[in-house]
Length: 238
Image 1: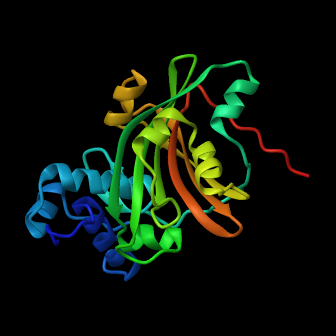
Image 2: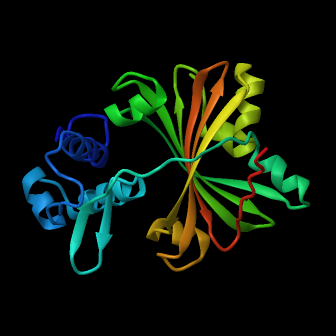
């Protein structure tokens, strides 16, 4: 791990482990080294290693068995669901008062995995924005967004505090969302999300990965955790 690299250490470790899984160094259903062993091998803190394993589990690369360890997951099937919408407008439409809290806003260099997802180059600059979405003051969704800096070069935290993100895109950069692809899967609420939701950890939730495009160019990659006790989804098939 390069501790001088601008790519966060947990993402560097995540990228390395994914490469080993993809290359077959860790086979499907094979047990991974323990947190302690990974700390020693990579000279990283337990917090960093734990965050990496949480992200790998959320991405579907690994799964945990209580008391037994962490194992490489079989490949999962993916059902594409596409629905273009705005949280703010959806809440207004059902008579709720939407609100957004910006929990963090920082500029990062993309690791290879994120860069590949976003159609960008490794170490390209992006904004990482973590937000809590509320309706009538009740927290419903915890979102982490990655936005290409080259598309929104002057974006600030203040912009996103004062206006909905898509309004900033259209008003300041003349960039609108013309298409969005979303992937849905089951997950559980983690400690940091539970603290924001006012809930206990490990309760069921929906994980939503959104790829938003402007004229075929990706402008947003967002990972959302939606409370399982507050959301359900309807898909109309024709």
